[in-house]
Length: 375
Image (tube, rainbow, N blue to C red; front, side, top):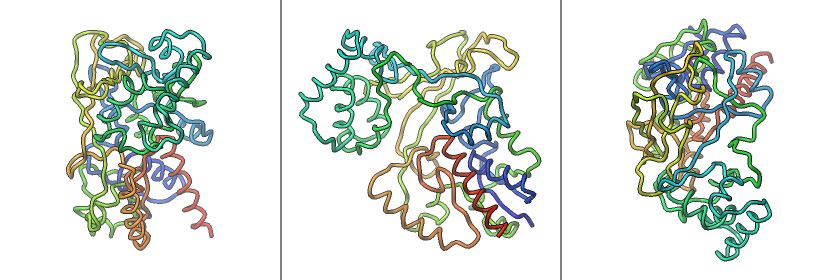
């Protein structure tokens, strides 16, 4: 009999399992995939750590999270500086003085701010009601049309006028020449890949892969006092209230017999006509070097295609609208009635989480659980 059965070996489950093991509890982990790590899983191809489920760049301002995760990996100094490709025109992301100079020929922050204000006023936007209006109020019409509209509509599968304004409020806009996408004190990629990091976290913990928890729920539940479930909350209840909506992502990954394809880890294709949203060139997350510090003669790229989620696909991004918020709240009520089951993580809470927020949430859960045990 185990103290905890943790369903899912992604970051939330891995943090919880590691902390409980360290506290002297017995833990069994199961995962329906053939590998650990959830969506942060990385696999080696041609000596390159490939982010199988999309680019994962760690960044945080949370000192506790940073101190915790760096026990299990040394992080490099990778800085996220994506590039936007609009019909062959290249622009810096996040939107900064490089972008504004390329777009309008402006040189000073004052000129850039004046241009944005001029276009915002021309659009007549005072209170943004949707993503399109929010974007124009932030960066003007030109940048919206070239660098936001097509990419966003591919990403979400909906016109920008139908998307809520808050989706784009976290978009970095800077009147400086800073190309660093994240304003975070700590940022980087674990050297040796995320899979190695998670392996270190799960050292000494029993893990059963290729195990579908929901297909064997009764027998697995019988093995532990408490279940920590990190899968999709609606799937747990067999979609009895209806399915929550997600956006999914499909990847086309290929090895190229060349040392350099695009010269950057991430290039976003912002026109509507290009079917993929971006191309990731994985070697640049670790500066083109393998684990031994050698330059790699080949490269690996992944094209990303956004799509509407359907059963059988991997759910990636919750579709945050009123319908889904209301439906999730109903599932949350059902979850509260489940005895000895804790729901957590991106899918368990139907919430978009950055990696540091997932870790912080799992650590907070561990604090609560430890406190309850002590009392």
